[in-house]
Figure (cartoon, rainbow, N blue to C red):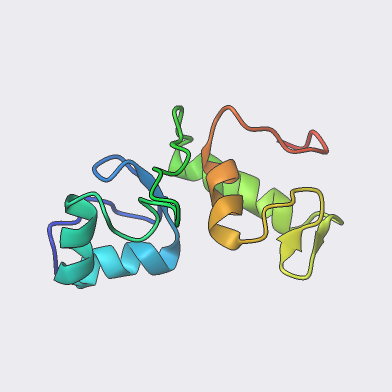
Length: 110
């Protein structure tokens, strides 16, 4: 185990990024990944262009993220394992929207 402080997947205050369940598990169990995030160059900390990704400025609580996710998974707009109204192309980007208190559902459901 590493020095990971997060109890659940979601926004990581230490590394200032959103971690999917997979990234969270890597942070908790793999020292090499944990050290990469500590050094500011772990997965999700830099884009291909070398720019820092969008940072969530007002993170939601873990309960709010789960509430939003549950609503999305039960919505008619959820097709092919993604929200048809949010064109992001990847699941981690979708979770960033769920975790950002300043974001809203396009259908006004949260």
